Length: 167
Image 1 (cartoon, rainbow, N blue to C red):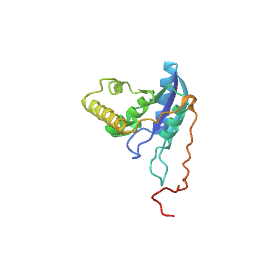
Image 2: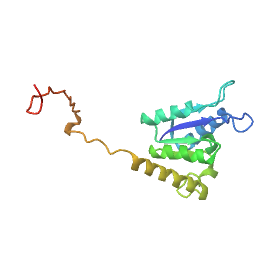
Image 3: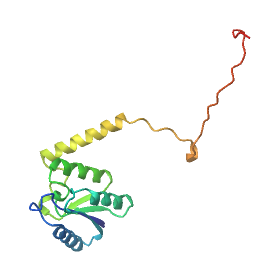
Image 4: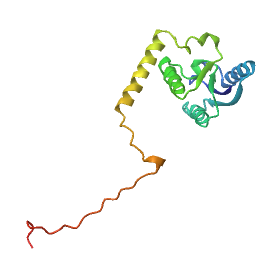
């Protein structure tokens, strides 16, 4: 399986594992399973800058290019420290048909179909929001056969004299 790793350091330097440690957990996890680690995308702290999501955007680029079948993290806290944000990112990846794995065996339940009441509640809300957005979106514009576009140009007409128009 082609796998892309995602590493994110905590915004608080004393909070979590450094990026190098997360990267090593991902590398060993893939080696043990026989998966092909195609890349590791990383969001790391830089002095004077807020912790962004450029690494996550890179991960989405790898996925969009068809370069990965799954994403592996060293723990769900690499996605976010907040459970709701974790579920939003997991939902986003699943809607892209990407399997998400964690090197932390204790998180298997959180990634399963039966994740516990709080995670299930968040998933249900996300599904309802997606259904609502789909319901509100306009219907697709029908395309002519062959996918060609049709251009219609409206031209102003010259007024025509009639019996009611004074001459």
